[in-house]
Image (cartoon, rainbow, N blue to C red; front, side, top):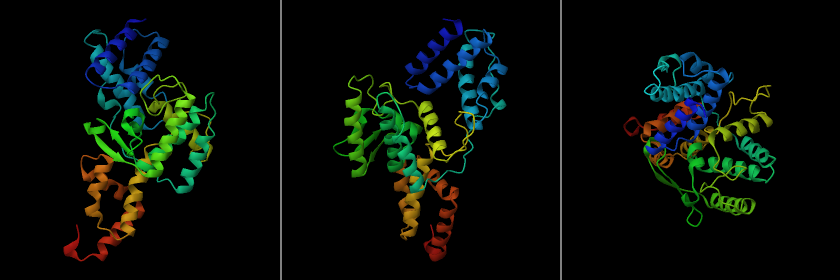
Length: 315
């Protein structure tokens, strides 16, 4: 084991000892160390960090920024051990996410995605089962993809139909009630999952082909291929995730779908919105208002709604 790989093992152990799960960053940094070893580099430099971060040529800038930020964190820690380490300047590749206009899935698109997911080939059959269930879960609950991946078996109450979302984004936990149809689908998944994978290797609810927790990086890659297969992404030669509808967009579709229903039903959306914000796990209702700004139909519905109300009754 090289000195820098040994240092990475220590770094990951420290981050997890501080209470972080650190699954995806650890995997990304392991690939970064592979890159360093291939380059014959003994320490981190800004140039190497930039080259690795931007290696996925067709990835979004936010992806480059996230990769760059992960290297910066490791480099900052490593610099205390190896003074040759360069800490890449933050401004070189801004990691702040620029919100893209969300893709709002139609019912037809969801049906095609589910059908394509069910056709995924694997030795055990787990791949098709898990990915079709993942898509259905995100569609019906509006969970963040990371929240779905983090679900343990104990978090999914298949009797009461309640999901326990623990210490997620912003450090919040919440309970998410699910529809009866979703509860039955998750129950079928759990039963079939245990038939196909009788040896429990993880407490995760959603598992991959090898019986371990489904990872976000793998799920995004498979979903990009599924989307490409049904024409939601361009059928380019490269196999990167690239640009196009994302797993996160199921959350946007869920939220905007509720808002459209409320506006069309003539409900007072200003009164209903805090309920949706709580369900989605937003720390501030202003975060939920963003969906109105992001979708043209919602903007028009909101304008119509305000135009119909007397000035004194407007929120």
